[in-house]
Length: 345
Image (cartoon, rainbow, N blue to C red; front, side, top):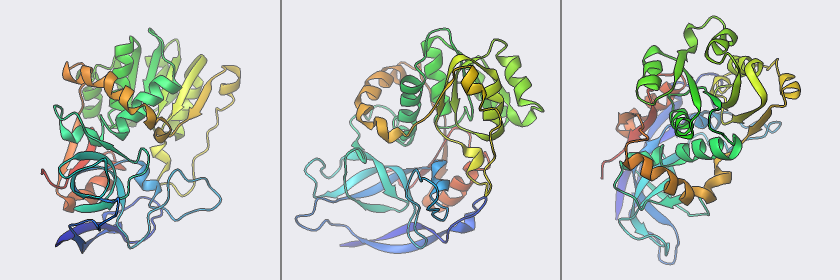
């Protein structure tokens, strides 16, 4: 038995800022069964996640640079993290009706091959299922592993989070407050600044677009300097932060969204600070920590159930609104975690 399967296709490699027209729709069909003897799993996609790293995958491959992830192929569906329901399974660990999160195509149905830590069965359904696109999925694990594993926080330390109202940043700030840290975030609108202070409990926040001098803004918020910087932006923000780091500070480099759409990357001028302030600056990839996912759930679920950790989502309804939701991410249009509802069930 076959079914229609609407897909979102990359038209061609992208240079500069992506446009909605770079993503087109394709009406395909999918067989609603798995061949006998196969260990593949057929899933119906319920929610899809929009994430900044997806922009990197839209670019033409450059052999001279190290790639975080393989580029998309023009003419084929893009893919990313999603929440799905099993329709048919040839894999012993999954049966019809199971819920999972992991890598799927931007389409109504996907046939997936399970590899270690590529997908996770959803066992806790007393929280919103959409949380597994963000708070309880890749973004949550990114915040948890970056903050605790890379930053090694201590009570009373000062913490700065850029892109703080996004999928990762909003959780980093709340984890830091739970730890007993002083936390400041930056965001790109006054609405987001208010969200940081009034919803997520940041001690202070500022709109970077309204600051003439980022160095001065950071000195105002951190008169004695920054112990921990959770880096999501890069560029001018990183340059200003380096001047304000404390001795033996730590910087977890999670992302650099300010650079993803530039054909010429911006340079960083203040790297010498890393030497004489003994700053540890470390990049990381969340998949290196997926083996700790059960520890993450054990830690974070009680806080969610008790209302001590909250999460804001920006929800686009329907796969047809997927391209505009994804492109909007690179213009700061989203407020909170951007996701797409493909189907409610």
